[in-house]
Image (spheres, rainbow, N blue to C red):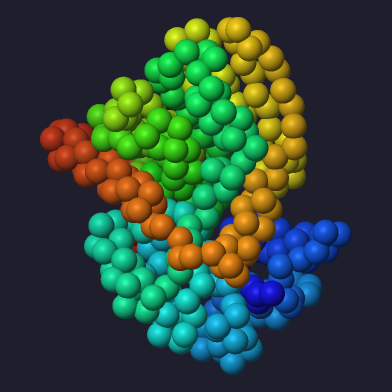
Length: 343
């Protein structure tokens, strides 16, 4: 039995991780959680209206409330603050760390996390619940069975309006760091290792304010299996969409992941010899956290290689976009820009 400690009470920590932990604690088939969760956030208002959760204002204070050896730390801070938080947790004896995606925002941060892991013998696992999703499992089955022929292409669309959070927070430097990491892990799982072919990003515009690199992002990959994949994310979209389309030689499979924590149903539409339209429950985050707690209790340290590969692809995409920006003539004047790193 393990004690949860949630570090960071933004949307991910407060609205997702704590809610799932509460469901897990009340599950009729037993819970892997030993005690109510402790949360950590320095903001005075962060713990307002929380029930059943003790809130510490610092990691040092949280350390006095829990035993590191039996604690799973949910690191729900933004990627720009990731290295400092992981360093302090490691130095205070915490070694079971569940880190929100992406693992790092850049190559230097990734290298430091790898060094920390080795130096302190950390068991670091990355939140990758789309890989645990029932929808992903059914897509994986279609690829492996080969009933629709060889997989040739994958297209993913991840769209949602993200004006309020982008204007209010500073932790995600580009649109590549928001939604795309979810889909990137899935396409690498379904189609194998890949190299970058192309990438684009755009600014988020709201009134007279322009947030550089936070409006949207896309990347195109060529996989070692010959599959070509494209992931597109529009954070200025008026509608929400989380869909994935697999194109086979003899048909297609289009999956729709649940759009929010308010409805956990997924859909899968298959054309070709297996024509079908399936609707099913798919609470991937709960399934993922249940497995992670079992693995922390019984399993070996997690392999970080797939998550490191995803970060390196994201870094290559950002480098590609920066190079394109430098080569593009800048128009004179224009609306005021508010740099994402300085917010």
